[in-house]
Image (cartoon, rainbow, N blue to C red; front, side, top):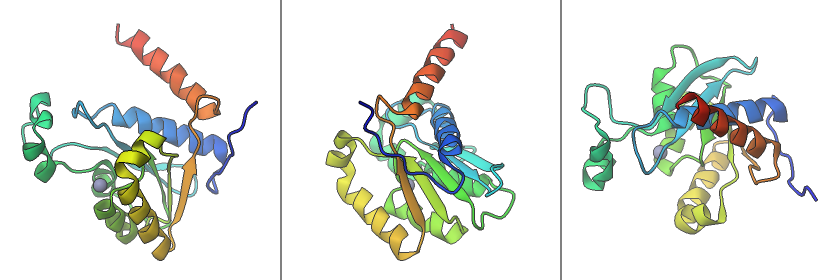
Length: 178
Ligand SMILES: [Zn+2]
């Protein structure tokens, strides 16, 4: 039996699914072998303002092995949502941020609020993610709540429509990269 519960933004589940899948795709552009994150910022009329993924700032050499060195990586890396905010050439007032694979860290959630984004949508975190990052996840949700940001989690478990789309896209990508 299909037990997932649908929560969706004002754009509706179909568009949430499309943009979550797109955030997943953008995350694959990151050179970080251990953590690939993606962000897509969307206007209320469903047009895209900006995208971003995690990586070093422009001009800084970013071969993959440097991402394995945490001491080198952490002070330099720009998180996906911050790149998406900085890449935007239009106002972000009242926009929707879609993220992959999880919610913002508490540092980035402050940028999201200050940028004027009003809704944040990301996949529902896995139990494994919660066991590692549960405290940070809770803090982010609390700060978004204090700032009146609408925060939504969409289900991507195996039976959800989004999971089917993701499987389809992964298959397509593996075919096209052959
Ligand atoms: Zn962050």
